[in-house]
Image (cartoon, rainbow, N blue to C red; front, side, top):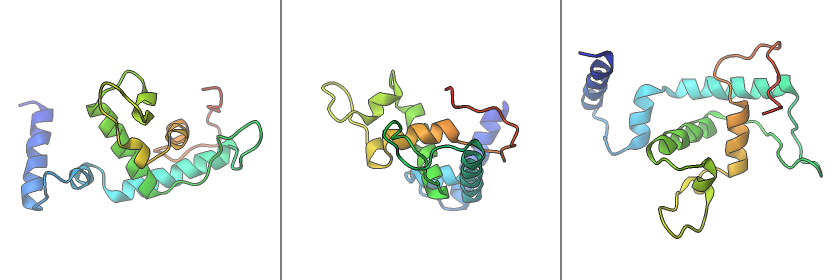
Amino acid sequence: MSCLILDIIESLKLIFFFNIDSTDSLALLDLFIPFEIYITIAENTNLYIFLKNAPTAPTKSNTRYWWPTNEYEIRILFGILYYMGVYREANHLIYWEKLKLNGPIHAIPDHMTLNRYENLQRYLHVSAPKSSEPCMESQ
């Protein structure tokens, strides 16, 4: 059997062993990503921002500024990314549209603003950043 199938079987065993409600998306997500990982990602992302001297206050020319993230916001971001992987759209901006004549109205804006999503995508850092990393400001 392939490794993927074996991994799926092991995951299903865990669901039954821990008596997890298979309709609870967050409980299923937590089987694969322990909460401690979100803490690490939040800490590394905040450290990366510090090293890159990202703006932390709005100015007349820049309304896209950073404020520290936390493990709960990173968990929401991962949920959004999984959702986007399942419910595909042509452009990520579509998930924040309020009025759509054809198609679903996504609930993502109820959980995170587009600006915050883009900032997190821009600065997300899973591993501990090194001070010698190239600046990503040009993206």
